[in-house]
Each structure stands twice: as C-alpha cells, then as structure tokens.
Amino acid sequence: MNISRHNSPQRGFTLVELLVVIAIIGVLVGLLLPAVQSAREAARRMQCSNNLKQITLAMHNYESTHRKIPANYTNGTSTAGNFSVFAQMAPFYEQGNMLDMIHFDRPLHVGCCPGQLVTPHDTAAKTAMPMLTCPSEDHDRTYFVTTLSGSGPTQAYSATNYGMNFGTGVGTLYDSRRTTDGILWINSNVGFESILDGLSNTAAFAEHLLGLSEQAPAEPTEPHLRKRVMMNVTCAFISRSMPPTTPGFTGFFLPEDPNEMEAYVRGSGLHRGWAGHRGAGWINGREYWTGYSHYHPPQSLIPDMGSCGWGVFGTRSNHPGGVHVARCDGSVGFITESIDLETWRALGTRNGREVLEAF
Image (cartoon, rainbow, N blue to C red; front, side, top):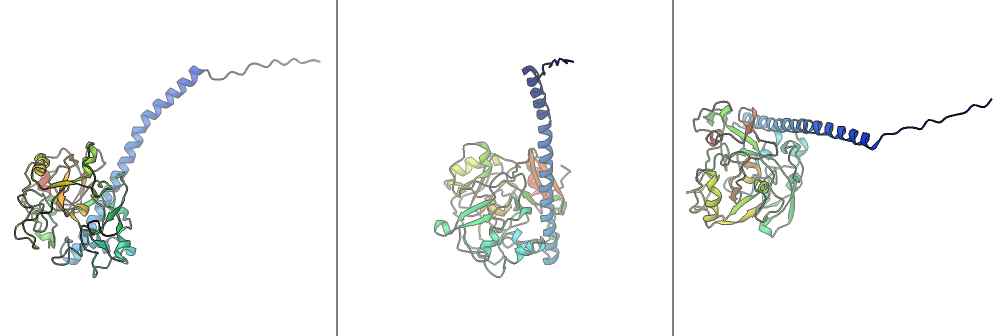
C-alpha cells in the first residue's frame, strides 16, 4: 500500500511581523529604561547620604573624645602637618589598616604647593576610601600631583567628593587662616557648645564634584566643565603672618553676589589662569581638596576661586537638581539648587543667630 506524503510548507515570520515585534520591544525598553536609571540613581543617592552620615558620626565621636571637632592644620603656624579632617577622624572610621599608615607625629609632607609626601603617608594618600567618594561621580578618582611647585616628584592621591564647611567666604572670609563664620579654619577650636545657631541649623559636610585631572587646565568652554575648575589668583596676601594681622588678598574683597564674582576676579589684576584637582586627595587639608564654602549656591556654574588652597569652593554633584548636605546634628538632607541664597548661607554659619525653617 502506497502512502502519499504531502509536506505542507512551513510558514515563518514575515518582514512586517518582525518589524512589529522589534518596534514593540523598542517601546518596552524605552518605557523601562528611565525607570531602571531612576532606580539606580536612587540607590546612588542613598549610598551618598549614608557616606555623609558615617562621616558625621565619626565627627561626633571625635568631638566626644577631644571636646572639639577636627581643625585644619594642626601643628601651630606651619602647613607641614596639614592632615585633613578626614585623616584626623580615621580612628573613628573602623579603618584599622589606614591607621597603620598615618602617623600624626610625623609631617604629612615637606615643602609646599603642594608638598612632597613622606613615607608612609605616600602610601596612605593613594589608598582609596570608598566612603569618601560619591557613587554618582564619573571622574577618575586617582590624581597624579606634581609636587614642590613643579620641581618635585609626581605622586598619586586618592580623591574625595566631600568637604567640611568653611563658611560663606564673603568679603575676606575666604581667608581661612583667620576665624571664618563656618566650623573650620586653620587651627580652629570649635566644640559643639560654640555652634550657637544649633547643630540642626549648621552644615558640617557637603559633596562636590572632582576637578579636572590637569593641575593647570586651559579655560573651559563647555558649561559643565566650569563646575570642575577654579579661577586661580595670585597668592598676594596682605599679611603673611600666621594668623594674619589683616586677612585676604591685597585689595581683594569678594562681593556679596556670586554672579559678580567672575568679573570681579578677572578685573582684579590677580587672575592668573585656571586650576583643576578639586578634591584630589582625601588625606590633605588643602581647602579646595577637603573643604567647601557657602558662597555659591548648590550646582552653580560660576567657577570656584582661590590660590594656594584658600578661596571659595562650591557644592556640586551629578545628582539631578541638588546636593547632599550633612548638618552638625548628624542628619543628612538633599538641598535643591533653587534654595534661596540667604538661606543657604545661613546654613553655612555657626553663630549668625538665624532661625531656619524646614527646606
């Protein structure tokens, strides 16, 4: 018996059907991608906030032990010691390996601008501290710094996205060789009892973007790069004594309005180019590495300004819309870029006697 077999043709997808499927997948990806990105940014913001909480907790433990919060420069009138507040708080981070590399009975570096790291601090300086960097930062976190004004060796530093509050920087308050209106200056001696505005009304730490990798970059032309540079001015102090008899650079009095600052600096005769390396090293107490001020509003496109480490250095981040700020009571909040400048500066003072509403 013959059995005939009829092979029915196998039907595949038509081109139109494939295009429809691809289009549907594309729509689904387009709908899901923003949600995924939003979830990732929320996780990064939470981690950044937790970093600041750990840093502020370390400050509280330091203050409880020493009856004051860390000062900038801790060896009299010299800058040779120049350990940052983060280095001084290392015993309270539960970073045992780091303590083996930091010796406060030895100088951090020798020389200046910046100094040459001494052993074993050269090893500590290039050791990353994850809690001192924001997970949203997309810049390289290792900096190579040429020491001794260009005549010394190039040494590696591990960066930080956080800084301690130097105050408003208005007028000559940018000169932290003398008492500022913040909680930090050279050889400061601030305990919680001297923060008269109250711990919940006074900023302690905030985040900032890392600077460009070049120590002396060209003037940036793209707006987003202006967040990562500093207007470099000649280090022409009225008084060279420590502390100075008269603060500030010669004839240099920063205007109240930050929008007037750039034109003021350019017209001062002291402007001498641009500088990168904001936040370049967590171990070093140079103000533009481990400090910040309340002169600019958050996320400002107005560049920072300074010389030899002193100046005004803003708070900026890759978080859309604002920055994280830790207050002296340990609370951390997200401050939007639209905050009123007067309120922002009030948050940066320790004894302005302002009463801040919730914001």
